[in-house]
Each structure stands twice: as C-alpha cells, then as structure tokens.
Image (cartoon, rainbow, N blue to C red; front, side):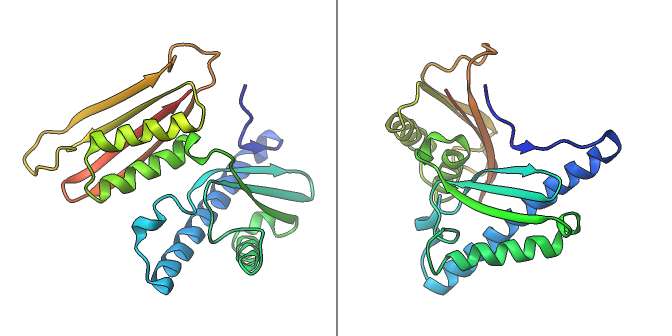
Length: 216
C-alpha cells in the first residue's frame, strides 16, 4: 500500500477549497525552487548540466489539522533547501512567502520541512528529470535509457521500464515514435504490485519529448 500525498479531512462544501489550497501550495514551492535555482546558476556561474537532478522535488506531502499545516518536501539532491546553515534561511524565506501568498493558511501555523531521500535514483520523478536533462544535451536516447537502468539497479529495485516518445532520432524530418526499455519485473497488470510512476517532458531543438518511468 502507498500513503496519500495529502492527509486531511474537510466537509463536503469545503472540499474543493482544500484541493485548491493544496494545488497552490505545491505550485508556489515548485516556482520558488525553480527561481532560486536559476539565481544560483547565475551567481556561481556554473552549467545547468552539473545541476541536472539537483533540487528536483520527488513529492510534497501536506498534512493539515485544525490549526496546523505541515508541509514536507521530499528531495533527492538539495543544495538550496537544507536543514544546515546558512541555507536554512532559504527554508524560512519559503515559509514566509508561502504563508503570505496563500491566504487560506494565514490563520493557521505553518510547519515546513525538507526530507532527503535515501535512494534518489530509485524515485521515478528524479530519474525522469535525469533522463530529460541528458536528452536536452543531445545524449543518445539509447545510452540514456541504459544509464537509467544501471542507476535503478544500484538502488536495489526489482525492475524498471523507461519510455520516450517524440522525434528522438535527432533529425528534423523524422516521424515521432515511441521507444522503450525494460529490465527486470514490471507487473503493470497486477493491482497489488507497488509500482512507482513518474512522467515529465523536455523541449529539444526538434520538439517536445515525453518521458515515462515505471519502477517496481
């Protein structure tokens, strides 16, 4: 079984308002991290390739009670949001801006925490971002998929399936197609199997590529 990413209870008439609040919280956090990530790249004068999977959010868990909203950000590799000084000030800045912009939580206490994942490449969202950055830098899609399989094997998972769709051959006049690679067991037809799924898109010079990752 898997836990929910939003843990709270509301009356029927207030349920839609709770969903909107969760959506705005997650979008605000993602936009803040992306903005700070760009500032960090410009300040340190480093390539975005070296930060391919840095500060990628795996998931955001929201636990709400009557007077407290607890937000936990799960990340694999974090350079901007950590519990150490002086980067801990970034968490405080995010907490202040979040409470200021989201008027639903102004009357409640907001607790914001960042959790580091033990096996980052065992998460489909982080692995999908890794594949996206490699494809954006014109690495062969077959090489990228094999690298993804090796990374998942190091995370001690039972199986992985990677799918890339679009004009992946690197030619302007090529027709879009779907390529996939599977290693190990990925029982997609079994309801009781705990399979993690993630998807993302990447814009290349020949169009948009869609990436899907299943990890068992």
